[in-house]
Length: 473
Image 1 (cartoon, rainbow, N blue to C red):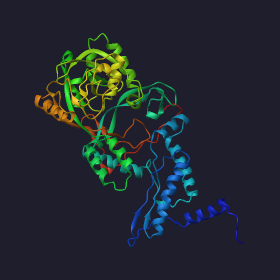
Image 2: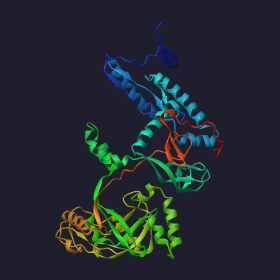
Image 3: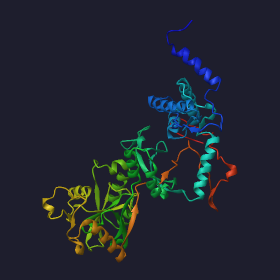
Image 4: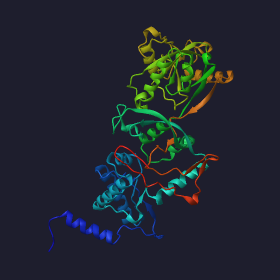
Protein backbone atom coordinates (compact mmCIF):
# COMPACT_ATOMS: atom_id res chain seq x y z
CA UNK A 1 0.00 0.00 0.00
CA UNK A 2 1.34 3.44 -0.96
CA UNK A 3 1.46 5.91 1.91
CA UNK A 4 -0.10 9.14 0.63
CA UNK A 5 0.68 11.22 3.70
CA UNK A 6 4.22 12.48 4.17
CA UNK A 7 5.45 11.45 7.62
CA UNK A 8 8.91 13.01 7.98
CA UNK A 9 10.03 11.19 11.14
CA UNK A 10 9.35 7.79 9.61
CA UNK A 11 10.50 8.47 6.05
CA UNK A 12 13.53 10.61 6.81
CA UNK A 13 14.85 8.41 9.62
CA UNK A 14 14.51 5.36 7.32
CA UNK A 15 16.61 6.87 4.56
CA UNK A 16 19.09 8.54 6.90
CA UNK A 17 19.76 5.13 8.45
CA UNK A 18 20.16 3.63 4.99
CA UNK A 19 22.61 6.35 3.96
CA UNK A 20 24.66 5.84 7.12
CA UNK A 21 24.65 2.02 7.00
CA UNK A 22 25.65 2.01 3.34
CA UNK A 23 28.02 5.00 3.56
CA UNK A 24 26.17 6.64 0.69
CA UNK A 25 28.34 9.78 0.80
CA UNK A 26 31.72 8.15 1.31
CA UNK A 27 34.37 9.51 -1.05
CA UNK A 28 36.51 6.94 -2.82
CA UNK A 29 39.48 7.99 -4.92
CA UNK A 30 38.54 7.69 -8.58
CA UNK A 31 41.23 8.99 -10.93
CA UNK A 32 38.83 8.65 -13.85
CA UNK A 33 36.64 11.49 -12.58
CA UNK A 34 37.41 15.21 -12.21
CA UNK A 35 37.95 16.17 -8.56
CA UNK A 36 35.80 18.62 -6.61
CA UNK A 37 36.40 19.72 -3.03
CA UNK A 38 33.33 21.25 -1.35
CA UNK A 39 33.96 22.73 2.08
CA UNK A 40 31.76 24.91 4.26
CA UNK A 41 33.20 26.57 7.34
CA UNK A 42 33.50 24.28 10.35
CA UNK A 43 30.97 25.27 13.04
CA UNK A 44 31.92 26.07 16.60
CA UNK A 45 30.31 23.36 18.77
CA UNK A 46 28.23 25.69 20.92
CA UNK A 47 25.47 23.18 21.63
CA UNK A 48 22.84 23.47 18.92
CA UNK A 49 22.62 24.37 15.25
CA UNK A 50 20.68 27.51 14.39
CA UNK A 51 19.12 28.67 11.14
CA UNK A 52 22.32 30.42 10.09
CA UNK A 53 24.05 27.04 10.14
CA UNK A 54 21.22 25.41 8.21
CA UNK A 55 21.32 28.11 5.53
CA UNK A 56 25.08 27.81 5.09
CA UNK A 57 25.28 24.02 5.04
CA UNK A 58 22.24 23.59 2.81
CA UNK A 59 23.89 25.72 0.13
CA UNK A 60 27.10 23.67 0.35
CA UNK A 61 25.11 20.46 0.21
CA UNK A 62 23.35 21.56 -2.98
CA UNK A 63 26.72 22.30 -4.61
CA UNK A 64 28.16 18.93 -3.53
CA UNK A 65 25.15 16.95 -4.79
CA UNK A 66 25.02 18.90 -8.07
CA UNK A 67 28.68 18.16 -8.79
CA UNK A 68 28.25 14.48 -7.88
CA UNK A 69 25.35 14.24 -10.33
CA UNK A 70 27.57 15.82 -12.98
CA UNK A 71 30.23 13.16 -12.69
CA UNK A 72 32.69 14.74 -10.24
CA UNK A 73 34.56 12.81 -7.57
CA UNK A 74 33.35 15.01 -4.69
CA UNK A 75 35.07 15.35 -1.33
CA UNK A 76 32.56 16.89 1.11
CA UNK A 77 33.85 16.65 4.71
CA UNK A 78 32.69 18.10 8.02
CA UNK A 79 34.65 19.15 11.11
CA UNK A 80 34.54 21.21 14.27
CA UNK A 81 36.31 24.46 15.10
CA UNK A 82 36.38 23.26 18.68
CA UNK A 83 39.06 25.24 20.55
CA UNK A 84 38.28 28.66 21.95
CA UNK A 85 37.30 30.83 24.88
CA UNK A 86 33.55 30.03 24.94
CA UNK A 87 34.25 26.43 26.00
CA UNK A 88 36.58 27.59 28.72
CA UNK A 89 34.12 30.21 29.92
CA UNK A 90 31.32 27.63 30.01
CA UNK A 91 33.58 25.26 31.93
CA UNK A 92 34.35 27.90 34.56
CA UNK A 93 30.69 28.85 34.84
CA UNK A 94 29.35 25.31 35.18
CA UNK A 95 32.30 23.62 36.86
CA UNK A 96 32.90 21.09 34.05
CA UNK A 97 35.94 20.34 31.91
CA UNK A 98 35.88 22.11 28.50
CA UNK A 99 36.68 18.81 26.75
CA UNK A 100 33.52 17.24 28.16
CA UNK A 101 31.42 20.30 27.27
CA UNK A 102 32.85 20.39 23.74
CA UNK A 103 32.52 16.69 22.92
CA UNK A 104 28.92 16.56 24.19
CA UNK A 105 28.07 19.51 21.96
CA UNK A 106 29.79 17.88 18.98
CA UNK A 107 27.71 14.73 19.49
CA UNK A 108 24.49 16.72 19.60
CA UNK A 109 25.30 18.86 16.57
CA UNK A 110 26.41 15.80 14.61
CA UNK A 111 23.02 14.24 15.30
CA UNK A 112 21.30 17.41 14.05
CA UNK A 113 23.37 17.52 10.86
CA UNK A 114 22.63 13.89 10.11
CA UNK A 115 18.92 14.55 10.62
CA UNK A 116 19.20 17.32 8.02
CA UNK A 117 20.40 14.69 5.54
CA UNK A 118 23.54 16.59 4.58
CA UNK A 119 25.84 14.63 2.25
CA UNK A 120 29.00 14.56 4.38
CA UNK A 121 31.59 11.83 4.38
CA UNK A 122 31.61 11.36 8.15
CA UNK A 123 34.65 9.05 7.93
CA UNK A 124 36.67 12.21 7.28
CA UNK A 125 35.34 14.17 10.27
CA UNK A 126 37.94 16.24 12.14
CA UNK A 127 37.88 18.17 15.41
CA UNK A 128 40.52 20.85 16.01
CA UNK A 129 40.71 19.98 19.74
CA UNK A 130 41.91 16.42 19.05
CA UNK A 131 45.60 15.56 19.06
CA UNK A 132 45.59 14.12 15.55
CA UNK A 133 44.53 17.56 14.29
CA UNK A 134 46.41 20.00 16.50
CA UNK A 135 49.64 18.10 15.89
CA UNK A 136 49.55 19.72 12.47
CA UNK A 137 48.58 23.10 13.92
CA UNK A 138 51.80 22.89 15.91
CA UNK A 139 53.75 21.69 12.88
CA UNK A 140 52.63 24.76 10.93
CA UNK A 141 53.56 27.00 13.87
CA UNK A 142 57.07 25.54 13.85
CA UNK A 143 57.34 26.14 10.11
CA UNK A 144 56.32 29.80 10.58
CA UNK A 145 58.67 30.18 13.56
CA UNK A 146 61.67 28.88 11.59
CA UNK A 147 60.95 31.44 8.89
CA UNK A 148 60.61 34.34 11.32
CA UNK A 149 56.85 34.61 10.83
CA UNK A 150 55.79 33.54 14.36
CA UNK A 151 56.96 36.06 16.94
CA UNK A 152 56.29 36.76 20.59
CA UNK A 153 55.72 40.28 21.80
CA UNK A 154 53.76 42.19 24.40
CA UNK A 155 50.19 43.12 23.62
CA UNK A 156 47.45 44.78 25.64
CA UNK A 157 44.54 42.45 26.45
CA UNK A 158 41.29 42.75 28.36
CA UNK A 159 41.96 41.25 31.78
CA UNK A 160 39.47 40.23 34.46
CA UNK A 161 41.26 39.91 37.79
CA UNK A 162 38.35 38.05 39.39
CA UNK A 163 38.16 35.31 36.73
CA UNK A 164 41.91 35.55 36.16
CA UNK A 165 41.42 35.35 32.41
CA UNK A 166 41.61 37.27 29.15
CA UNK A 167 38.33 38.45 27.63
CA UNK A 168 37.40 39.14 24.03
CA UNK A 169 36.14 42.66 23.27
CA UNK A 170 32.54 41.45 23.05
CA UNK A 171 32.84 39.94 26.55
CA UNK A 172 33.49 43.35 28.07
CA UNK A 173 30.22 45.16 28.76
CA UNK A 174 30.46 48.77 29.92
CA UNK A 175 33.99 48.13 31.14
CA UNK A 176 33.05 45.07 33.21
CA UNK A 177 33.33 41.31 32.82
CA UNK A 178 30.27 39.74 31.22
CA UNK A 179 30.44 36.78 33.62
CA UNK A 180 31.26 38.19 37.07
CA UNK A 181 30.71 41.95 36.54
CA UNK A 182 34.22 42.65 37.83
CA UNK A 183 36.04 45.68 36.41
CA UNK A 184 38.11 44.83 33.32
CA UNK A 185 41.50 46.46 32.81
CA UNK A 186 44.05 46.49 30.01
CA UNK A 187 47.05 44.34 30.82
CA UNK A 188 50.22 43.87 28.80
CA UNK A 189 50.91 40.16 28.34
CA UNK A 190 53.36 38.25 26.17
CA UNK A 191 51.44 37.01 23.12
CA UNK A 192 52.26 35.05 19.97
CA UNK A 193 51.61 36.62 16.58
CA UNK A 194 51.82 35.59 12.94
CA UNK A 195 53.52 38.37 10.95
CA UNK A 196 50.89 38.83 8.28
CA UNK A 197 52.08 42.43 7.91
CA UNK A 198 55.06 41.04 5.97
CA UNK A 199 52.58 40.17 3.22
CA UNK A 200 50.51 43.37 3.23
CA UNK A 201 51.62 44.53 -0.21
CA UNK A 202 51.23 41.06 -1.70
CA UNK A 203 47.74 40.72 -0.24
CA UNK A 204 46.82 44.07 -1.74
CA UNK A 205 48.29 43.30 -5.17
CA UNK A 206 46.57 39.93 -5.37
CA UNK A 207 43.09 41.42 -4.93
CA UNK A 208 43.13 41.93 -8.71
CA UNK A 209 43.33 38.14 -9.12
CA UNK A 210 39.94 37.65 -7.45
CA UNK A 211 37.89 37.50 -10.62
CA UNK A 212 34.18 37.36 -9.96
CA UNK A 213 34.39 38.72 -6.41
CA UNK A 214 31.97 41.60 -5.67
CA UNK A 215 33.71 44.95 -5.86
CA UNK A 216 32.34 45.96 -2.45
CA UNK A 217 34.03 42.93 -0.86
CA UNK A 218 37.35 43.71 -2.54
CA UNK A 219 37.01 47.33 -1.40
CA UNK A 220 36.45 46.15 2.18
CA UNK A 221 39.59 44.01 1.95
CA UNK A 222 41.56 46.92 0.51
CA UNK A 223 40.42 49.19 3.34
CA UNK A 224 41.24 46.49 5.90
CA UNK A 225 44.82 46.34 4.60
CA UNK A 226 44.77 50.14 4.52
CA UNK A 227 47.86 51.06 2.50
CA UNK A 228 48.87 54.71 2.57
CA UNK A 229 51.85 56.72 1.40
CA UNK A 230 53.08 59.67 3.39
CA UNK A 231 55.86 61.35 5.34
CA UNK A 232 57.33 60.29 8.65
CA UNK A 233 59.19 63.10 10.39
CA UNK A 234 60.16 64.04 13.92
CA UNK A 235 59.40 66.91 16.28
CA UNK A 236 62.12 67.86 18.75
CA UNK A 237 61.10 67.61 22.42
CA UNK A 238 63.76 69.74 24.17
CA UNK A 239 62.53 69.18 27.74
CA UNK A 240 63.51 65.50 27.58
CA UNK A 241 66.09 65.78 24.79
CA UNK A 242 64.13 63.43 22.55
CA UNK A 243 62.52 63.26 19.13
CA UNK A 244 58.85 62.49 18.56
CA UNK A 245 58.12 60.82 15.20
CA UNK A 246 54.73 61.30 13.51
CA UNK A 247 53.31 59.94 10.26
CA UNK A 248 51.08 61.94 7.94
CA UNK A 249 49.50 61.48 4.53
CA UNK A 250 49.05 65.27 4.36
CA UNK A 251 52.53 66.80 4.60
CA UNK A 252 51.10 69.83 2.78
CA UNK A 253 49.48 70.80 6.09
CA UNK A 254 52.68 70.55 8.15
CA UNK A 255 52.95 74.32 8.63
CA UNK A 256 49.48 74.31 10.23
CA UNK A 257 50.38 72.08 13.20
CA UNK A 258 49.33 73.71 16.48
CA UNK A 259 49.58 70.66 18.77
CA UNK A 260 50.67 67.02 18.76
CA UNK A 261 48.78 64.20 20.46
CA UNK A 262 50.12 60.97 21.93
CA UNK A 263 48.35 57.67 22.49
CA UNK A 264 47.86 56.86 26.16
CA UNK A 265 50.20 53.87 25.74
CA UNK A 266 53.04 55.87 24.16
CA UNK A 267 56.31 55.38 26.11
CA UNK A 268 57.07 59.10 25.88
CA UNK A 269 54.11 59.82 28.17
CA UNK A 270 55.99 58.45 31.16
CA UNK A 271 59.09 60.47 30.19
CA UNK A 272 56.96 63.62 30.12
CA UNK A 273 55.62 62.79 33.59
CA UNK A 274 59.03 62.99 35.22
CA UNK A 275 59.30 66.02 37.52
CA UNK A 276 55.90 67.09 36.20
CA UNK A 277 53.35 68.50 38.69
CA UNK A 278 50.57 67.07 36.48
CA UNK A 279 52.03 63.54 36.51
CA UNK A 280 49.33 61.93 38.67
CA UNK A 281 46.57 63.54 36.63
CA UNK A 282 48.16 62.43 33.34
CA UNK A 283 48.67 58.85 34.55
CA UNK A 284 45.07 58.63 35.78
CA UNK A 285 43.81 59.86 32.40
CA UNK A 286 45.98 57.31 30.57
CA UNK A 287 44.75 54.47 32.79
CA UNK A 288 41.14 55.35 32.03
CA UNK A 289 41.77 55.63 28.28
CA UNK A 290 43.64 52.32 28.10
CA UNK A 291 40.54 50.57 29.39
CA UNK A 292 38.40 51.90 26.55
CA UNK A 293 37.96 49.63 23.53
CA UNK A 294 39.71 50.47 20.26
CA UNK A 295 36.29 50.83 18.61
CA UNK A 296 35.18 53.30 21.25
CA UNK A 297 38.40 55.30 20.96
CA UNK A 298 38.40 55.58 17.17
CA UNK A 299 34.67 55.97 16.52
CA UNK A 300 33.74 59.24 14.83
CA UNK A 301 30.82 59.49 17.27
CA UNK A 302 32.75 59.05 20.52
CA UNK A 303 33.85 62.05 22.55
CA UNK A 304 37.42 63.17 21.89
CA UNK A 305 39.20 63.74 25.19
CA UNK A 306 42.69 64.90 26.03
CA UNK A 307 45.03 66.24 28.68
CA UNK A 308 47.81 68.78 28.16
CA UNK A 309 51.15 67.49 29.45
CA UNK A 310 52.48 70.98 30.10
CA UNK A 311 55.33 70.23 27.68
CA UNK A 312 56.13 71.39 24.14
CA UNK A 313 57.54 70.04 20.89
CA UNK A 314 59.17 71.99 18.05
CA UNK A 315 57.86 71.77 14.48
CA UNK A 316 60.93 71.23 12.25
CA UNK A 317 59.27 72.98 9.30
CA UNK A 318 58.87 76.38 10.93
CA UNK A 319 60.40 76.19 14.44
CA UNK A 320 57.00 76.77 16.09
CA UNK A 321 56.53 75.45 19.63
CA UNK A 322 53.39 73.31 19.88
CA UNK A 323 51.66 71.77 22.89
CA UNK A 324 51.97 68.03 23.57
CA UNK A 325 48.68 66.40 24.57
CA UNK A 326 47.64 62.85 25.44
CA UNK A 327 44.34 61.83 23.89
CA UNK A 328 41.89 58.94 23.61
CA UNK A 329 41.57 59.03 19.83
CA UNK A 330 45.09 57.89 18.92
CA UNK A 331 46.11 54.20 19.07
CA UNK A 332 49.71 53.31 19.83
CA UNK A 333 49.87 50.35 17.42
CA UNK A 334 48.95 52.43 14.36
CA UNK A 335 51.53 54.63 12.68
CA UNK A 336 53.92 55.97 15.31
CA UNK A 337 51.39 56.32 18.12
CA UNK A 338 51.56 60.11 17.79
CA UNK A 339 49.64 62.45 15.48
CA UNK A 340 50.21 66.04 14.46
CA UNK A 341 47.16 68.25 15.04
CA UNK A 342 46.11 70.51 12.16
CA UNK A 343 42.67 71.89 13.09
CA UNK A 344 41.99 73.64 9.76
CA UNK A 345 42.83 70.51 7.74
CA UNK A 346 41.24 67.71 9.75
CA UNK A 347 37.76 67.71 11.26
CA UNK A 348 38.74 65.56 14.23
CA UNK A 349 41.54 68.01 15.05
CA UNK A 350 39.13 70.91 14.54
CA UNK A 351 36.72 69.47 17.12
CA UNK A 352 39.56 68.79 19.55
CA UNK A 353 40.94 72.33 19.14
CA UNK A 354 37.45 73.79 19.60
CA UNK A 355 36.93 71.84 22.81
CA UNK A 356 40.25 72.84 24.36
CA UNK A 357 40.71 76.32 22.84
CA UNK A 358 43.78 75.49 20.76
CA UNK A 359 45.15 77.63 17.93
CA UNK A 360 44.06 77.20 14.30
CA UNK A 361 46.14 78.21 11.29
CA UNK A 362 44.84 78.13 7.70
CA UNK A 363 47.40 76.44 5.44
CA UNK A 364 45.30 75.15 2.51
CA UNK A 365 42.58 77.16 0.81
CA UNK A 366 40.42 76.66 -2.27
CA UNK A 367 41.90 78.14 -5.44
CA UNK A 368 40.94 81.81 -5.91
CA UNK A 369 39.30 81.93 -2.48
CA UNK A 370 40.63 83.19 0.83
CA UNK A 371 39.77 81.27 3.98
CA UNK A 372 39.82 83.01 7.34
CA UNK A 373 39.73 81.10 10.60
CA UNK A 374 37.11 83.42 12.05
CA UNK A 375 34.75 82.61 9.18
CA UNK A 376 35.27 78.83 9.24
CA UNK A 377 32.90 76.44 11.02
CA UNK A 378 34.71 73.25 10.09
CA UNK A 379 38.03 72.00 8.71
CA UNK A 380 38.76 72.33 4.99
CA UNK A 381 39.30 68.69 3.98
CA UNK A 382 38.90 68.94 0.21
CA UNK A 383 41.57 67.33 -1.94
CA UNK A 384 42.11 70.46 -4.03
CA UNK A 385 43.62 73.76 -3.03
CA UNK A 386 46.71 75.95 -2.71
CA UNK A 387 49.04 76.50 0.23
CA UNK A 388 49.14 79.64 2.37
CA UNK A 389 51.10 80.49 5.52
CA UNK A 390 53.55 77.76 4.53
CA UNK A 391 56.83 79.55 4.04
CA UNK A 392 58.45 79.05 0.63
CA UNK A 393 55.72 76.56 -0.29
CA UNK A 394 52.95 79.17 -0.12
CA UNK A 395 51.11 79.55 -3.43
CA UNK A 396 51.85 75.97 -4.55
CA UNK A 397 49.08 73.60 -5.62
CA UNK A 398 48.62 71.14 -2.76
CA UNK A 399 49.56 67.94 -4.63
CA UNK A 400 52.73 69.51 -5.98
CA UNK A 401 53.43 70.82 -2.48
CA UNK A 402 53.10 67.34 -0.96
CA UNK A 403 55.96 66.11 -3.13
CA UNK A 404 58.04 69.24 -2.61
CA UNK A 405 57.62 69.16 1.18
CA UNK A 406 58.57 65.48 1.38
CA UNK A 407 61.65 66.23 -0.76
CA UNK A 408 62.55 69.08 1.60
CA UNK A 409 62.17 66.92 4.74
CA UNK A 410 64.45 64.27 3.24
CA UNK A 411 67.01 66.84 2.10
CA UNK A 412 67.11 68.39 5.58
CA UNK A 413 67.37 64.96 7.22
CA UNK A 414 64.41 65.17 9.60
CA UNK A 415 61.93 63.03 7.63
CA UNK A 416 61.48 60.36 4.98
CA UNK A 417 58.84 58.92 2.69
CA UNK A 418 57.04 56.01 4.25
CA UNK A 419 54.41 53.42 3.30
CA UNK A 420 52.05 52.50 6.12
CA UNK A 421 49.38 49.83 6.54
CA UNK A 422 46.35 49.57 8.76
CA UNK A 423 46.75 45.79 8.79
CA UNK A 424 48.08 44.37 12.05
CA UNK A 425 49.86 41.12 12.89
CA UNK A 426 47.54 38.24 13.74
CA UNK A 427 47.30 37.47 17.46
CA UNK A 428 47.12 33.66 17.72
CA UNK A 429 47.33 33.15 21.49
CA UNK A 430 45.19 34.41 24.31
CA UNK A 431 46.53 33.31 27.69
CA UNK A 432 44.06 30.45 28.20
CA UNK A 433 43.87 26.68 28.63
CA UNK A 434 41.53 25.51 25.85
CA UNK A 435 43.72 25.96 22.81
CA UNK A 436 46.55 24.23 20.95
CA UNK A 437 49.71 24.38 23.11
CA UNK A 438 52.52 26.45 21.62
CA UNK A 439 55.37 23.97 20.92
CA UNK A 440 58.10 26.05 22.55
CA UNK A 441 60.39 25.05 25.42
CA UNK A 442 61.58 27.97 27.57
CA UNK A 443 65.13 27.06 28.52
CA UNK A 444 66.93 29.21 31.14
CA UNK A 445 70.20 28.73 29.22
CA UNK A 446 69.14 28.57 25.54
CA UNK A 447 65.99 30.71 25.58
CA UNK A 448 63.14 29.69 23.25
CA UNK A 449 63.60 26.22 21.75
CA UNK A 450 61.21 24.46 19.40
CA UNK A 451 59.94 21.05 20.41
CA UNK A 452 61.43 18.56 17.89
CA UNK A 453 58.99 17.66 15.13
CA UNK A 454 59.24 13.96 15.99
CA UNK A 455 57.88 14.73 19.48
CA UNK A 456 54.73 16.50 18.28
CA UNK A 457 52.03 16.89 19.39
CA UNK A 458 52.69 18.73 22.61
CA UNK A 459 49.62 17.46 24.44
CA UNK A 460 47.16 19.64 26.29
CA UNK A 461 47.08 18.39 29.90
CA UNK A 462 43.75 16.82 30.82
CA UNK A 463 44.08 16.92 34.62
CA UNK A 464 42.81 20.46 35.06
CA UNK A 465 39.92 21.18 37.40
CA UNK A 466 37.24 23.63 36.36
CA UNK A 467 35.43 24.53 39.53
CA UNK A 468 32.75 27.16 39.10
CA UNK A 469 34.52 30.51 38.97
CA UNK A 470 38.10 29.23 38.91
CA UNK A 471 40.68 27.05 37.13
CA UNK A 472 43.31 24.98 38.92
CA UNK A 473 45.89 22.30 37.97
